Image (cartoon, rainbow, N blue to C red; front, side):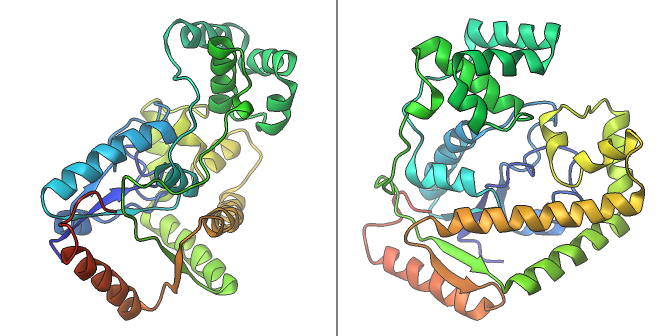
Length: 291
């Protein structure tokens, strides 16, 4: 394995501990051969968001570059990658008394109370944020209380940030092939013990409302516990949800400028592009801040 590179994981669910099979984490052998960061460092009960990812990733990019290596930001959460490439909006940070009060309200009266408050104070946000998205609902209320402004009044940066030098590679496959591979991967996950993994998480106290348990491949089992699904139904729903997610993610990735699209099966072509980039940077000003 090429020792010049280290991986910075940008998959929002691979960050959680104990969720190995359903998130298709790298194998132990791969983790031993190639350094990976931001994998399995949070319990499923802890919220992980784009702001957390960007702060951690920026620190890692600089640390990896200082070792004379190249950071490779890799993963399937397009929103996280976009936030790293463009930067975050200038909205106020959350936390403190406001967050404590909102959590207390949710604990006392349920998440519906937060939705009602958001609908009363910011109807546009209530329409644009999914009803079951507890994190974004709470965040919108935090911003309202700290700034008096809607979360949607803050503009997202539209230009790639210039404090890093990015090479952006997008891997693509024909849609029919991609969907076949998704279905086959779900079959492999079940054969590898996905149901047993989820059962273990439940026995260790994980609940349906935990952020990690909202992931595809996990939330469907909680629906089965409510008596709505069989195991066959769960598998089919995971396949369906994964295909839909892949379609949404590809749409998001294609909206990012300066992406070099390559066929995911063209390993030689991918390697050649990376090597060309590495050589060009070596002739430039040293490694610097690159990804």
